[in-house]
Amino acid sequence: MNNKPNVVMVGLGYIGLPTAALIASKGINVTGVDIHQHVVDTINKGEIHIVEPDLDGLVHHVVKENYLTASTTPNKADVYLIAVPTPFKGDHEPDISYVSNAIRAILPTISEGALIIIESTSPVGTTEKMEQIILSNRPELKDKIYMAYCPERVLPGNIIYELEHNDRAIGGINVASTKQAIDFYKLFVKGELHETNAKTAEMCKLVENSSRDVQIAFANELSMICDKAEINVWELINLANKHPRVNILQPGTGVGGHCIAVDPWFIVSEFPEDAKIIRTAREINNYKTEWVIEKIKNTALKFELNEGYKPTIACMGLAFKPNIDDLRESPALYVTSNLISDNFKVMPVEPNIEQYPEFKIYKQEEAIEKADIMVFLVGHDEFKNIELNEKHTMLSFVKN
Image (spheres, rainbow, N blue to C red):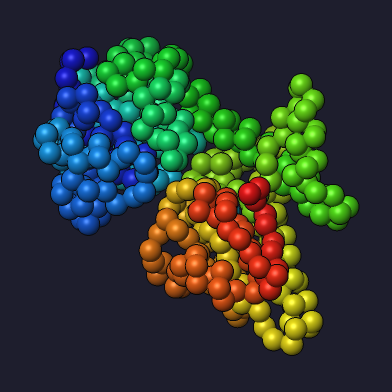
């Protein structure tokens, strides 16, 4: 591995752009590739199109120093990183077409000795499938390129730090590929780099998020039981966690984001007869969101019966977790959209975005002034010190 390889990053979203910027900050030339022209134009102006602390300054710096440029087409490179989405198709089946399209896009530029790393969340065996796409189109590259899989392990809101400091599991299609990938990540990762094979690395990503999903499902199921038993779930969890070997997570509106809400289905789709707990946890967490909707609707109908008019409902938060603008697989967004489609009077509030194509986003102050029912769906910092008055009915599905 050259000390300063040329790098192409395919995909400039929530993972691709921060990773590209971090690599560029080490004095490495990076070309970021994205199919959206507005994303390319924004980055080439030294600006960003997503919300992530510290990212704007970093991108501005590396673009100004000419270490990061963006384009809609890839160029020849020593290292190619693939960080594109892997959505669903059909009945929760993983769609790897974005990954395969990214591989096909770089096909003409790949040369002998190139290292191709997939970071996109992928079903087991994807890296080997992508190698076959390359070799079926470029057979002369057989045994002359390196391929590996290395999933990210980052927390939105702290991505830059975690990209640099978190451990990574890195698996190649062969030992030589693993070694090449390890050497590359050493250039910008301070965390420990753990060697494995591609299939194990792919499964590692899925298992990590499935494990978290199962733990959240326990908390969400507990919250619904406590509601029926008229027990304060927050107090209960706090007390139970005083046990030295108990660590129950906090329940919420459901589970969102492109990782925890999605990755478990990759295992279920491949191993439908075996992934019983994983499937059940997914179903519980999805059901929690439907339960929240019914809880809000029942509260609104009760209000109307008592007060004689339809209440205005402030839905506080749309992102899938606190203090970010990411709406992917967001249960809060799903709840809000459902209420609007069922003709409830709704004032959506999301301090991290200014507008949304499907409905109007209201300012927090206006919602507090005009709403009858305050529904807290996301635990944004901006919501922690809100003072409600006697006219408000409050429903909170997150710990404040």
